[in-house]
Amino acid sequence: MPCFNYTGRVKDGVKLKGQMEARNADEVARQLRSINIFPLTIEEKVDDKTNNKNNSLFNIANKHTLKTDDLVFFSRQLYTLIKSSVPILHALEGLESTTDNPELKKSISKIRESLDEGLDLTQALERQPENFSAFFISLVHIGETTGKLAEVFRDLSSYLKNQQNTKKKVKSALRYPSIVLIAIFVGLVIINVFVIPNFADMYAGFDAKLPLPTLILIGFSNFVIQYWYLCLGIPALAWLIFLKYINTKAGKMMWHRRIVKLPLFGKLILQSSITRFARGLAITSAAAVPIVQALKIIAPSVNNVYIEAKLDDVRAGVERGEPVSINIKRTNIFPGLVVQMINIGEEAGSLTEMINEVAEYYDREIEYSKESLTAAIEPIMVVVIGIIVLVMALGIFLPMISLIGAIG
Image 1 (cartoon, helix red, strand yellow):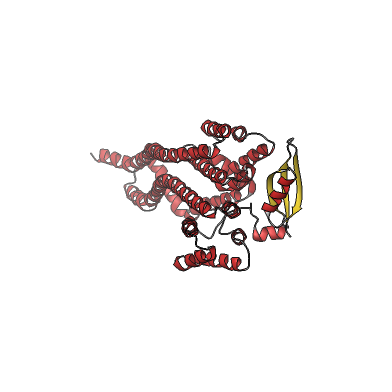
Image 2 (image 1 turned 30 degrees about the vertical axis):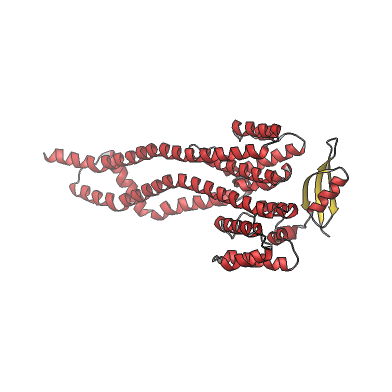
């Protein structure tokens, strides 16, 4: 029988920790309530080897084989079939036969095999941490234990679709400046490799004294042509070192902390993380997941380890019996509007509704920020391109003007 670590709180507010053997987490919760202990967290105890190999319920995988589109399709179809009273095995069998995605077909086949072995759906999903996040699995577990599996899959489908739309909005906002910067880089390479050398040869034939801007352009062009391997190698090496550093724990924390404070882009990235947090909290709150447990499974979904660490601090504060809104305010990350709306939701007993309002609000804000970002970047890009054109024009055409004047 598996063993579970638990934390709980008794009526006088004292926090307790302990272990208990039971068939599942629900049985642990029932036993704790029967002895007047309110459960805060319940986690299955696993050794390090098992944990590393299989992943636990609350250890989200960073890379998933299935794409968001696949999970949306999977959730939406199961909602329809289960709502129509189709047995889960028959639903999965039909779903496996209709999907054209080989990865999803393979995943469904594994789920069916697990169910045939006598496991429940939650346990079957836990066998595929590379495909299903802890958030997804936890909600399915809630749906199974409460008999509301169809509603859970409906909410998951909506949640994943909204997450996907948020991600697309952010990518769309960042696409324009990326394309412009690439175009500028390609243009500079063409000018320095093909255009300026031709003008340099022409000016050399006149044996004239060249102005400083022209000498700088010719010198830079010669450097690029002669030491092209350094011009490519140094940036590539710096990029690889940067990628390696941000893949470390300290590096990722530093980068994620700074990225939300970047000029122009930081606000958009922070808004997307807040939207993910709000939608996750709303769906777990609606599913009656304890707030401490909900914060634990939501934190990785924000895709920012800095904000995730702040949410861990929020969870620690809630475990001490403090309101969510107070701990959210202490993070100094979430805007006052989020704090105020969560506070209102807590006091009125309508946290789910208020946090949904936060998510809807920031969905609109992301769209506005995307338009504002484009509007702000356009003049900056125009100025940058103008400066480059001016420097090129001065460097290339000043000698021509001098030569024409000398001939005239």
